[in-house]
Amino acid sequence: MLKDFLKQGVRIEGLFDLISRGQDAFDGSWTFEHHLTSPNLIKFFGDTSGANPVRILPYKRGQNANTPMAGDEVISGEFSGCIMGIYKDQGIAMVNHVDTEKDGFGQMPQKQAWEALKRRGDIELFNESSTAGLIPKLISGMTDKKLLKQGAGISILCIASPTKYYSITRVAVFRDQAHIYKVLKVV
Image (cartoon, rainbow, N blue to C red; front, side):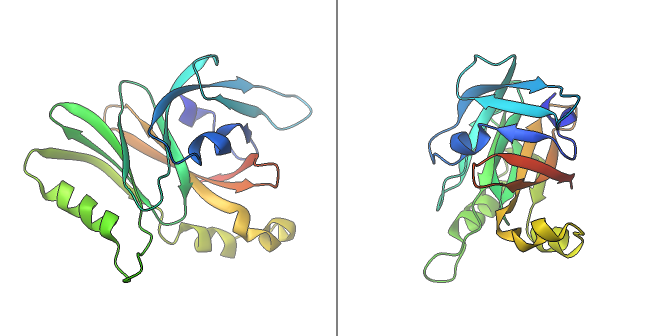
C-alpha cells in the first residue's frame, strides 16, 4: 500500500500537478524507486502506466471533492486545515476532501455541508481526520533552520486506505520550487 512507502525523506514527484488541477477525481498510479545514494522516490502518474493503482482526489477550492474508494487507496492534498472523511453512502465507501476555507462572509459552507452529510441517517461514518493546526505544530518542532525559513512550502497529504477500519494516513511534506515533495513526517 502507498501509505507504507511514505517514510521520512522520501521524495514525491508528479503528484502536485495531479492534485492541484481542481478537477474531478480520477484513476492514477505510482511507482517506487529505491535509491542507495539518494532519497527513495515515489513517482505519480495521471494514468495507469505506473505499477500501483491509486485514486487521485484533487482539492477543489470552495467545494467538497469526493470519490468512491473503489478498492484502491485515495490520495488528496494539499491540506492546510481541511478535513478528510471516509463514509459509506448507499453501500459505497466514499472519500471526501472537505474545504474549510472561509467565504466572504466568514462562514465555512463546505464544512457545514460535511456536518449535515454526517447527520444523515443513511450515512455510516468510518473515519474523519482534520488537519487544522498540524502545520504550526510541525513548524514549531522543526530543527532544520533552512526548512523553517521556507515554512510556507509545508502542507499535509492524506491517504485513505481500504483497510478493515478505513484508515487515514496524514503525511507532512515540504514542496520545493520544482513542485517535488519531500516527506518530513507521518503525523
